Structures are given as C-alpha cells and as structure tokens.
Amino acid sequence: MTSPSKTIEDNSITYIYDKFTGKKIENIYLEHGQRPEIMFNVESISGSLDVFIQDEYGKTVYENYDIQSGEFLVELSRAGDYKVILNAEDHVGSYNMTWSLPKASSDEYVNPYENLAGGKWLKANFHTHAGTGPGTCGVNPQDVVIETYKQLGYELLTISNHDIFTDTSNYTDDKILMIPGVEYSPSSKGHMLTIGITQSLHEHTNQKAIEMTNEMGGFVVLAHPNWGRQGYWPLNELLSLKGYIGIEVINQLIYRLSGSGLATNAWDFLLSRGKLVYGFGNDDLHALGDAGRSFNIIYCKERTWESMKEAIDNGQFVASTGLYPEYLVLDGDTIRVKASYPIDTYVDTFTYRFIENGKVLSEQTAREGVYKLNGEKYVRVEVIGENGAMLFFQPVYLKDTLVKP
Image (tube, rainbow, N blue to C red; front, side, top):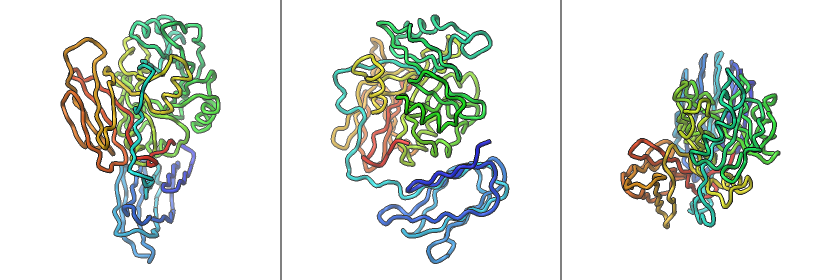
C-alpha cells in the first residue's frame, strides 16, 4: 500500500493515502484573469468520498457525493477565495485538485524541433531485458539481443534488467552505443527506467531513486503506465512525483501481457496540468520477437551519451512504432508537420492528429499536417500510416505554461 503523502504546489494539491476517514479542508484562491474553475482527479479503490465547495461567504456553491474514479471539472461563477471540503468514509485512493494553471508570459510557443541542424536521427531503445538466464525476463543472451538490435538499425541501446545492473559497455562499437541503465522494479512500487547509471536503486522509494539517478547524471522514464490495468501508475502519483523526464506512451510488449501499451491518457493528464513530460516508446524486450516494435528516434549531433542526453533534455525526439519524422516547424502561428516511412516508397500520405487535453482538435489525411494555433496551452501531434504504424511528437506549448516535474 502507498504511504500517505500530500504534495502542495502553487496551483495544485495531491493527496495519496491508504485510508481516509473524516474531513479535510483546503483553502484556495482562484486568480482574476483566469477561468474560475477547479479540475479534480479522484481515484477511488473503496469507501466513499464527497466534495463540497464554499465561497468566501460560506455559501455552498458545489456538492458531489460518493465520487467514483475519474476526472471532473467544476466551473464557478467568479474568481476569489474558496474552501474545498472533502468528507470521506474509509476511502482508499487519492485525489488531486488543480486550479489557475500558469499564465503564458507571452503568446510565444515553444517548439522543441526548432532549428535542428548538424545532426541526424538515431534509433534508440531504453527498455530491454537480456542475459539473466532461464525463467527470467532476460532469458536471451546479451550478444544475441544486441546483434538483433544492430540488424534492425538501432544505434543506441540499453539493457535494463530488473533491479540488476548489467554491464554491456564492451558491446559498444562503430554501429551501436550501449547506454547503461536498470529497470527499477520492486514488487510494491511502480517500475521506472533509470538510464545512465550503473547500479540498482530498488531499495529506495520511487522519489529517492529519481533524485539519485538525476544526481548521477542520468534520467528516469516511468514504465508502462497502463500495464495490467488503466492506472498501473495512478495518475495522481504521476502528478506528485518530481524529477522524472517522461513516461512510456507506447510499450508494445504489454499487448501480449495484459492491460494497454498505450498511455496517451496519462500523458495528456500531465500536460493539461502544466507538467512538461516527454513521451517515450520502448520495446520492453522479453523475447526476440519483441524487438523493433516501439522505439525512440532522437536527433543527436553525434552518437555519444552527452549528445543524446542533451537532445532528450530538450525534447528533440519522437516515439514511434514504425514511422519517422521529416519535420515539425512553426510557420508563424501554424504548425506544419510531416512523417515518412524509413524505406524507398511511393506512400506519402498519412493521417495527422492534433491533440490537446486528450481531444482531437483536427484530423487530416494528407502529405503534410497543418494546424493554426488558437491560444492552446499545448498541442501534440500523432501520425498514423496506412499499416497502422504511429509517430508521437513531443508537444508544442505556450512559453511558461509547462514546466518539468
């Protein structure tokens, strides 16, 4: 079970607990110039939770009883001081409330793919199991797995076994750079990819492991958010953790296990709450047939750890199940984006989806996707090919509205 924890930010409160009985009162202020609304996300495993909102005069302006898991938006009549009252009876789960999201400092949009020059796109996988023997996820020998990825055109690869560091540095050659890493995977905690480090941190909490990885110069990706069930990684826990760089938005191994390998619901949940979280694609290879099904394509100036890490920190990569990026540019207030297959083909038409807050703003089937921005806090692009292959671009967003966790 999760130990009780409360995370308070300027415009957000998250509370995660084993069991909550009684009353909690949160005082919040809705700023003038912002929409007077509060977004709630509740995860209810058992018990009951009621929410009441009172204005500055003590008048109840909203009430909701026995809330089930899900998101809901409360629209209020005006800015000002409000009191949010939560009554619970043996409630197991969590809640988050978010209000007055950061205002843009200007109408300037940030495009992580702006001015890419002097480098090339490199194919990468950070979630691979190998060399741990019969009866384990890494049943296949390291040399066989690494050779498989080299044949598939990968230039960056991590063997990230469960709670064990596997040194593969001797496999680095002129075709592939081996990146150190470990899959953090204690049974009672959410799995994470701790990339760029040479030790397992499984004896620590998720938050401490993230902090230690960052201190050692690495980065952390939260793994398969919907493995087994939607919410393997509870959304409010994703919101409360600090310091990770992204989540796996596509992990195709999950489709032969249980749950869903797609986690765009979690991605949009975080982005819509002001968190600049990047989307990754990884194989999570257990069997050789898992290789090459979902991957990252990173724009690197050279094939080195330093160049790759800089690109990831800047969001200059995409997640893919088979398509490659040609470009994503901002032409004034208009996004222009194009994808392609990595082969010689006449196929040059794709379906482009422009998405904010989980909603498709525009869907087009064309050689190029085009979308005119209209004040959205962020827009991300998905591309779909004729064979179902997908490409996930990192979001374009209004300056200062998204910040890294």
